[in-house]
Image (cartoon, rainbow, N blue to C red; front, side, top):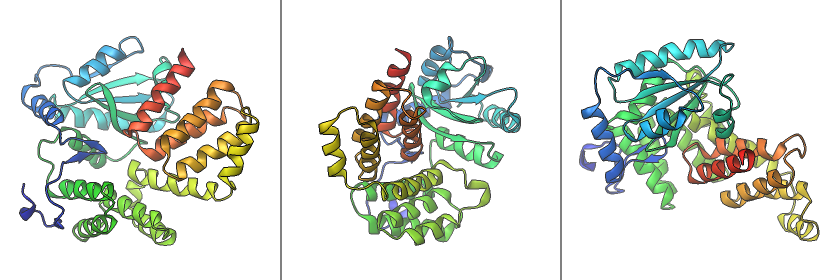
Length: 331
């Protein structure tokens, strides 16, 4: 599709299309998606139970052929019983373009522990051997269908292309263009959750917190659990905490005098995150986990998992820090 055909175009030029934060504009990703839709065998069972032992083959390796959704569930979980049949239905309708792997966290706790899964149901999508997107909770069938559609679509359509253009404008520091694109999308679809979240995030970054909250209030009740919305709310909550933490220079002086001052390092990590220094924030919290896992009832690891949620499952720092955390916990 050319920009002339897109009513959301604001003159930003050609764009790569993104799915849930994963750049799919590269030749490799595009080819992988096309190949999965054209060559997936129709007779193969697309749903299976997996274990810790089979995870590498059934999820990691299999996701190099087509996306694999991992459904983290447990027999005692009521919402899981609502979500799993919906997942199975939509996955079967995809006719091999996506597979579903169901993992019982009671019987196989290691994998969800490594990935920081703290509540269920939780679904993480793997593609090209790595986690790329996900959601939590028993969301409606329409949202499950939309989620899978983003992973399997060969042509994303006008709104998806516009959202990608907004994302590129933000990366280039052109917030005004991003706001115009999000606003244009919302004129056509007032409940488009990614546009609402993106607009709210830009307002928050500009210091217009009340307006950002008003935009989030427009998110439909059924979509309030969307990952993009949760990420913005998490950033707002973190900012409120950071405002009470004090002077970062003083925290650094405390650490220079006493490297074992975990409280100073913890508070500094929150400030680093608020500044956008994600790697530094992750490293600070990982240092506490390495030195004293039990400090304040595992507070450093718990906060790190909160940051993962705020940054997004497919964020490069999230993925890198998850690997480092897994090494610390399971080495």
